[in-house]
Length: 122
Image 1 (cartoon, one colour):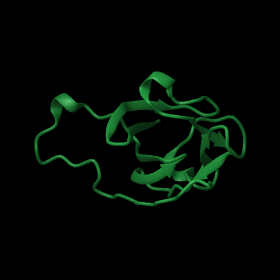
Image 2: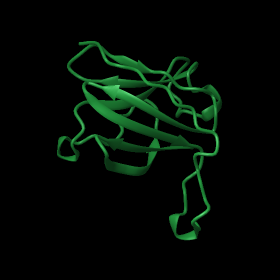
Image 3: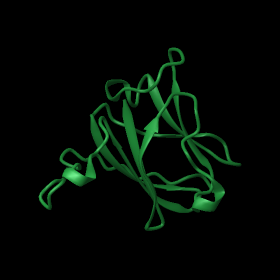
């Protein structure tokens, strides 16, 4: 199972959101995020797994503009810095839920970050 964190314009909107296939990730307007994120399975209707990210499983940004594919890598932990519809976003995707109560100051879930910056069409 994959989980996602989303920070928009410096504000953390959610942590540890379960990533399910073909369902919008929590993106209520009151959270301050314009648009929605969804994983699509190119080979069926399964929930995404890290080894298929960027190929079988695509992360889509849905808004009033054309659908935008967010480039992912097939790694179990990654962070992406993206600009989506003039919103500065940091998306963290990881394979297992974090137990924040068990963390110490030296813990870093970004041990293998992948950073990609994309700009949505104007």
